[in-house]
Image (cartoon, rainbow, N blue to C red; front, top):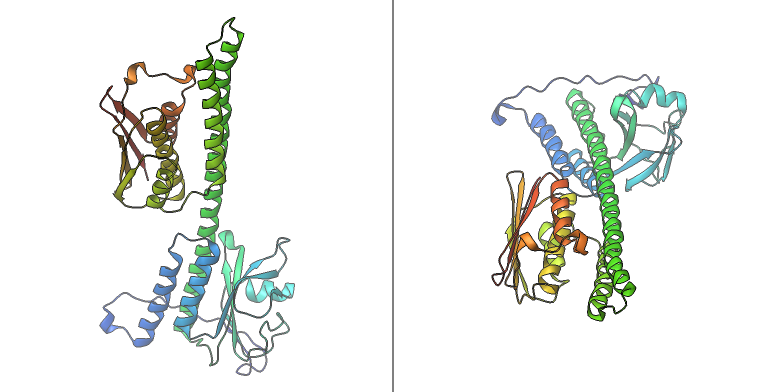
Amino acid sequence: MVVGDDDPDHERRVVSAPVLEDGLAGRLAPEVLAGLGAVSRVSRALVGTGDLPALARAALAAMRDALHLECTALYLPDADGLPVLRRYVGDAAADELAFDEEAWRLAVAGGAPIVLREAASWLVANPFDPPARDWMILPLAGEERELAGVVIASARERIAVDPLGGTVLSLLGLQISAGIETARLRRALQQAAVERERRTLAAEVHDGLAQYLAVARRELALPEPDTERLREAVDAAHKIVRSRLQELSTDTPTGLCDAIRAAAERVKLPVRVSGSGEAGHEAVTLVARIVSEALANADAHAHATAAEVRYAARDERLELTVSDDGCGFDPATAPGVEDGHLGLTVMRQRARGFGGDCEVQSTPGAGTLIRLWIPL
């Protein structure tokens, strides 16, 4: 719809949205190709792994370039739910938009793009400084037609509002709305994964300390405690606390290779890392923890002189191996949770909790190989 000097009585006209039929590019009019190009560029901008501000900036930049706009900004609703929106990203002047409630319900909540050629004080104050002569409000509808936000834009030249232009604007609004919802869901999932990982680490610290301190207490209760075993239990308790606190205070890199290399840098022995592919945040965190545990065992218990990590993330599956040249052991007789050794058990639990598995192959004198696989 358009409001301005082309409509002296401020009558609003809803732009129809014709269906664009498929066809060869050579048979499409240049205006149609330009519109499809705009939609495609915004789609590519929204398909990313960044956070909501980064995705929004990329989408606004693509929209600005595609439609020859001067300024674009994304506004999101205030917490109280009223038609008051605050600028989230963008280069518009005003930090807040306060819509007239009745005008908002009639004009903006309908979902059609509005192009204004006047101050439009009946709807909302002109947000640009100096006031824009030609500007646009693009409502963004969320789930169940709830308000997800609005895009405010200005242009040096008049914004096209013919049927094709209206269709393109409506499609862009739907895309950005979907991008907002997707980014928010991704952020919520990442926060849940981080919180779940912190709880897991806290349980490991508690359980590990309990096991090692139980060993120390048993030794102290003996008439002649084994000082060497007591020292080992205290040292192990200290090590697990230091290691877990270091993991909690260190941000896991977002990339799979970077996360594995960061885990490798925390041990003294040289580690070779090779592989290809990428994974999501939760899978990267899981892999980093398992690699960290495996390399810590190779360094502290196997007395290895070198280790290697190989990984491949493809076909919705991630496979990883950690091998070392240490002294090896017999998995059938290896100390377990009851002896205060949690590493192997924790690795298996982590992998199985993710829907995968982790197995250990080792022979005394022949090193250790740990195989991990998880679904992506």
